[in-house]
Length: 125
Ligand code: FES
Image 1 (cartoon, rainbow, N blue to C red):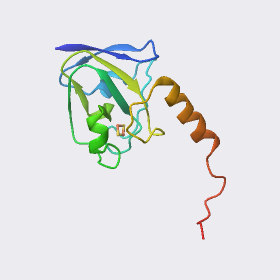
Image 2 (cartoon, rainbow, N blue to C red; image 1 turned 45 degrees about the vertical axis):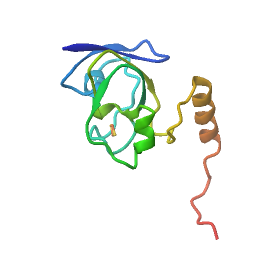
Image 3 (cartoon, rainbow, N blue to C red; image 1 turned 180 degrees about the vertical axis):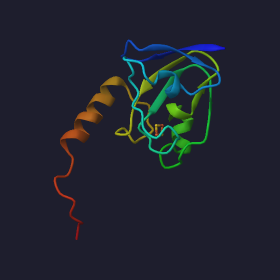
Image 4 (cartoon, rainbow, N blue to C red; image 1 turned 60 degrees about the vertical axis):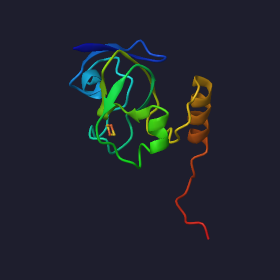
């Protein structure tokens, strides 16, 4: 059975079978809006929040998706299999907290992280 996948703030819309991951269904599309990395639940770049719909999950790194994340429907698209139509919010690797983020919070988070990156790798004394 095929399910419709939509992504907040994006025109991306695609079909995903109930036996494949959202990331696999999206891969190769020109309007892909979820980052693709290891495809095995280990790197976290495909982090999304499920805003609506039902799903099943494969094995994911606990370092990338804690129990708190899962309780807030923050998961990895490469391990996410739909059991209904899904509406998603793409978060990516740079958003490494599990709070439910509004679009404004997400933009502020990304802007702050980009401008506050340390310029050296020295160890604090
Ligand atoms: S692509 Fe690496 S965790 Fe999904």
